[in-house]
Image 1 (cartoon, one colour):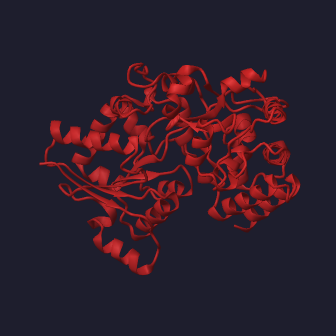
Image 2 (cartoon, one colour; image 1 turned 120 degrees about the horizontal axis):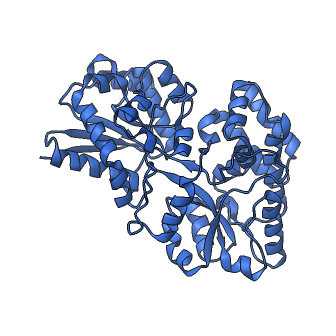
Image 3 (cartoon, helix red, strand yellow; image 1 turned 90 degrees about the horizontal axis):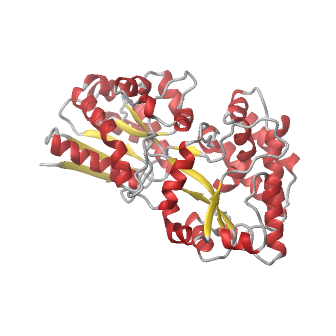
Length: 432
């Protein structure tokens, strides 16, 4: 009989009592799972997501085909901040789950330094699938020591979506540089068309624009240098290019009216209904525009580059793997059934992701009949990328991100200058 337990957690708060409780209910041996107990899985993906359904499907397949007594216990925390708080609580209490969501950032570095994560480079190599992993995804998840300690949930890509009919009507070519992008926005604005539908209820998209010039030029080198203290945002052209780009977009009046309150869903609805000519997209919801793509009214393009750049990574479509999947080294090494299940997972994740309407993180042929044409085309495009996306959300301290978001909102409102913005961010980093 198949046995699965699911717990949905909305928020988590660190208290001494909570940590003590976690320690008391954790497995013996500081996080080691006793064979035969349910496999504890902490995931940041909700039950309505394709990646969660893919995991559930593989668990069910394993129970049907290999071990009917295999049990799992899910803990789901979809709020990212709460997820990382809960994971840190488990780390402090030494009761890490067996399998858990993880970002390639400070918590991962801490876990790696303590030897608490399975070396995925070795696992993938032993399973003879390491060479199938997409190069950009490997770049996205690789740790400073050159190894992987987590695998992707799926292969995701980001891009700009645009109204092809409006571009053609106003004689606008797909922008290749940021100068082209700003010119396109101005042409649209002059014609009475709202150029850009911005998700503005949070600072996610503002951080994207700030980071684009650095990413297309040097991948993660800029933000790594900032983190290590070898560089500041005010040093050199890359931090400044992002600040000036965001300032130009905001002060140009190119954003849809009311963007400050727009969530991601609001922005997509507004773009879909024709309220603007450009917005930012993700392969996770690209299928939403499948009919418009097939009809030739919606298209996509990659991240423009700085026209003054002398070097570029050559990658213009940000590629990521969602939240990484990491394994508890202690329980993995002690439990043969855990190792057997994960071998099965690796053997079937490729086909199952496609069945769930997601792109696989292996560079295998994309089945044309499994996905709509827009996803097949995007999937083929991002398979050719070699540099993984670098999310500043994962790399920078939360207090720094708060300062950056606040100052970015002031920047697009022309309440501060690019120079003052850079100084404020540098001060926040120096004080963290």
